[in-house]
Amino acid sequence: MRMQEPEQWQQPEQQRQSSQEYSKGYSADSDYSEEYESEQEQKIYPQNSRWLDGTALAIFAIIFSSIGFFLTVAGIVASAIVLQFGHAQEAVLAGGIIELSSSIGAMLMCIAIFVFAIVTLALRARRIRRRVRIGA
Image 1: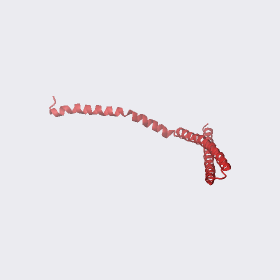
Image 2 (image 1 turned 180 degrees about the vertical axis):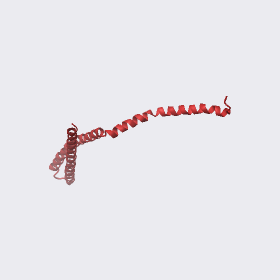
Image 3 (image 1 turned 45 degrees about the vertical axis):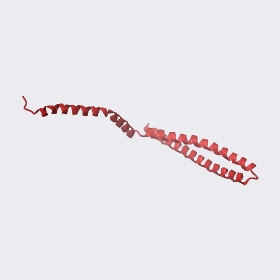
Image 4 (image 1 turned 30 degrees about the vertical axis):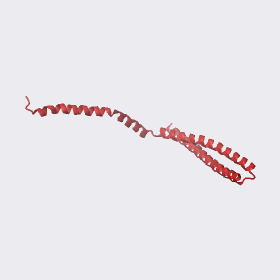
């Protein structure tokens, strides 16, 4: 028989409970390990997500710059109509000139964005083809 104080009899039970609580807390963190694994996969193969993000951005830039280009063409046509029929009123002529110059500036910006997006996509496609040839 052991000669222990009653306070010491309770310690093994408390230790057992604390170890159970610890193991429960540790098993609850299993989601963390899954997140860690997916993070590690991103570190190993980051090209896929980066490639998709850049491609989608370039495609949206092409679409929106094309829409903007046609809107600026409509603005130029509208300013031409205003300039043609606004002979007597100086304010209308000034508005037509401002509209014409801003439409031309916006058109140049849309063309620059369009060209930049096309060049980005072309260079990315060439880089990917080069990787495929090397890997094959």
